[in-house]
Length: 125
Image (tube, rainbow, N blue to C red):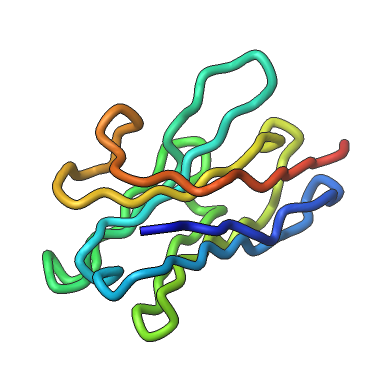
């Protein structure tokens, strides 16, 4: 599976962005999909994930700092996963990576099968 993330950019605090991650391959629907981020000088951290649709009905999981602000979704017909980010804060500034994983739930960085190239999100105060 190849993953291509897009949608990053510069936004003011309180604004919104929607990230997209397009996946190649015909087995997209069998992967748990997620988003991680890495801020300068920090380790990569988990942000959000959505499960393989046929398993648990599309369960979603978020890190505490984005709950109520970010929404992860997927469109299996388009092989795409999305991250809607609202009420953005300067501390959300990071490179965002999409990830695909077949078995571990929720996603953890060391178990990810496939990573996409990151997309930079910068939130100005």
